[in-house]
Each structure stands twice: as structure tokens, then as C-alpha cells.
View 1 (cartoon, rainbow, N blue to C red):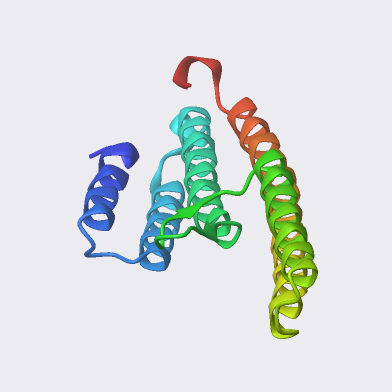
View 2 (tube, helix red, strand yellow):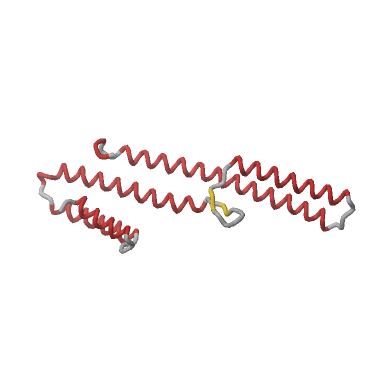
Length: 166
């Protein structure tokens, strides 16, 4: 049985939930180390190429899993509990809308002679809206930078694979 076939079996077990990420990585590393020690020197070049390919594939898979987890940290919760990646443009537009509405509310309440808590509510609305908008804008920028680093690293790893196997 080839290294690739044995690793495919491990991958199936991992996909079925029988192996955790850590167990899968550990089993694959042990398999690669065991097979590297038992192969005759005649096959060492092909084996080394195959092992290098599998190591890169493993790194890419781990990078993708790490990115999926990191990506979750940048998400914001929507009005009905949905989660999404904030955009810089929507953060700015949302902030303008919220601050504009808060100003309208505050000015309207103050000009109508409403009790003092109405204009104060408008001011609080403006503050909370501005902070939320700024936080969303900041997360959008952080996400953009993190995604750029992820894509750069993934391209670097893919460049290390042999051209015939991509």
C-alpha cells in the first residue's frame, strides 16, 4: 500500500470524525516517519518527493483550517443573529445613517421641548452608533489584512508543490 493510500484512509477517518485534527496530524506524521525509515535507498528520491508533496498538502490543509477559525473571529452579528464579514463601505454608510438619525432625533426632541431624556437618548444613540460603526470598520480592515496574509502564505505553499501535482 502506498503512502498516499494510507494517508487517504486516515483522511477518511478524519472526515468521518473518528480522528480529531491533532490525532490526524499525529498519525500522518508517524506514518510518514515510519515509511521514510523503512524504504530502501533506491526509492529515496521518489519517496522524498512524495513525502515533500504530502507535507506541503498537510500544511495547506492546516492553513485552511486555521483560516476558517480565524475568519470567524472577524465576523459581526447581524440584526437577526446572522453572522457576516463587515465591509469598510457598509460600516461607513451605517455610521453615517446612525449618526444622521441620532442628530435628527436629538434636534427634533430638543426643538419640540420634549423631556430631557429624549434628547439624551439621541446623543446616546449617536455615541453607540459611532462606536459600533468604528468597530465594524476596524474589523473590516483587520479582516482584509488577515485574508491577504492567508492568501500570500497559501500561494507560497502551493509554489513548493511539484508542477505535475497541483
